[in-house]
Structures are given as C-alpha cells and as structure tokens.
Image 1 (cartoon, rainbow, N blue to C red):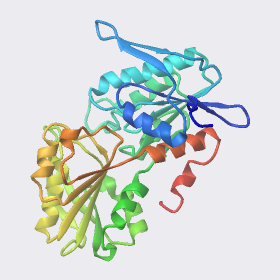
Image 2: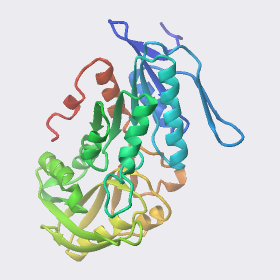
Image 3: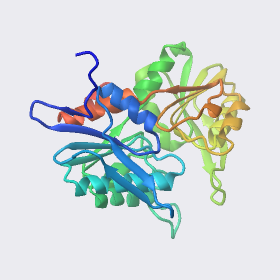
Image 4: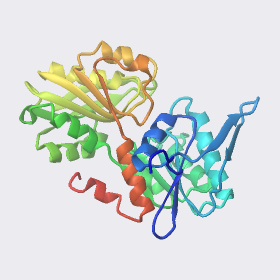
Length: 331
C-alpha cells in the first residue's frame, strides 16, 4: 500500500526476524544496505558521555532477532571499534538470537602476524574481542590476509569486491591489452582471480618495506610482461598512497602504457590524495567500504558501491543460504 513505511526488520516464513543495526561511523553505507534489503535500520540511541565513554541503547525489542551490526572501522578507528563492541554487547544482553558483526573494513587486519619479536597479533585480538562481546559470526570484505578467518571461533563470511571492481573495468578497457599486476607477493592469489576472470597475464612487483619506517616501501623489480600494456594494479587497500604510486612508477619504468589502480578499501590517510593526484596513475577505482569525503573525491578517483554485495550476503546468511554462491565462477 502506498504511503506505508517499511518495517525496521524483515521476517521469513519461519518467523525469523532480521534486524540491521549501525553505529555512527558510517551511517550512509548502512542506509544503502537497508535500502537494498527494503528495510529500515533498527532505531537506536548512541551518544558519548562527557568523558568520552560511549552509551548505546536500542529503542525496540531485539529478543530472538537475527541481528546484523554494521560498522566500518574508519577514523577515529579505535573509537568506532569500541562502539561496535558495545553494540554487540548490548544486543547479547537484550537476548538477540544470533549476532553477526558486519565490518566492511575490519580494523587491525594488517597486524595478522609477528614480523619481529615483541610485536602483537592485533587481528587475533580483534577477533577475540568480538567473540567475548557476544558475536556469533563475522562478515568482512577483502581481509588483508585470508588466515584472519581462522582467528574467530565461528563462521566468517569473507566477501570479495572483485566482481564489482573487475566488472567496472572490463567494460571500459580493451582486455587483450591488459596485464593484472600484484604489488607484492602477498597479493598474487587475489590477482590470479582477476586473471582468471579477465583472461589476461599476471605480473608481480618485488618490493621490500623499510622495517624502521611505517608505510615506507622500496620497489625493486617487475616480473612479467608490462611493456606497452594497460596495467591494473590490484591491492586490498590504499592508505597513504605511497606504495601504489611507487609501484606505478616501476611499471612505467618498464614501459607500461597506462596504469590503473583497483583497490577495495580507500583508507586515504594523510597525503594520499595529493600523492595520487600527482602520480602518473590514470584512474583509481575503489569501493565505499570506508567513507570518502567530498574533498577527497578527485577526478581520477572512482568510488563504487559495496552496499548491494553486503545486502545480498546478509540476505543469504539470514535465509541460511550460501554466501559462497555470490562468488561462484570468481575463484
């Protein structure tokens, strides 16, 4: 009937109830996901006390619901992670039947192993924190490494932005002229999925990080055929932009005709926008797993929506369907 407001939950024939909750970090993405699901976000009151402590209160009953708690871990990242944890705790104490943490960008994922002595494995700590808070399931997009799935003692839905990013580029490029490029050895498996989809060759950039300076990378050599070709540099995130700009320079030094960057997460910290703007990269394609404010949306930056993918995955989990089926033919 016209004029009716969509409910804040969705029910299945079994009378299960889906409820979508979102924190204050990135409500615009949560609204996009809710629109795709044809529901409204569950009402909640979130605010800070004078000393910065976070308070959460949900404004309608959540008893017995299938709760999906969406919060992308953007800056200030520690504040929003804490809010995410508190929301999960509140749902657990209010008798939600199942709680799925939806973190399009999962904070601390880069700290997934000890590179040197006396370092933390913060990605494992994150998983433990959400489990302790009461999460039954995790959902994230393009984790820095697949091994993080094993840090959480429960189901982990690892979503891939490849169909969104590759679908955009293959409709705009002459694919026979394309080489997919891994900016380091750790990205090779992901890039192989790209080459399987596009049917094009793979190149790898050998690099070494400066162990004493964060976010600093020295690029050494390119392995593979890039001369005269359009190169798609594929990475999981762009933080300061330094790594990807140096990788592009290495490709141009080897005769690349054009360099395009495809990355899932646009962290875009510090000098990133100036670095990308002043680089020889033709286009940078990212998704909106993290908010990209207007002042950072330069001409060469293209932002694609991840909301339809998140909504489909949430729907599959709610209906006990197959999240893997979303990526059939992509691996």
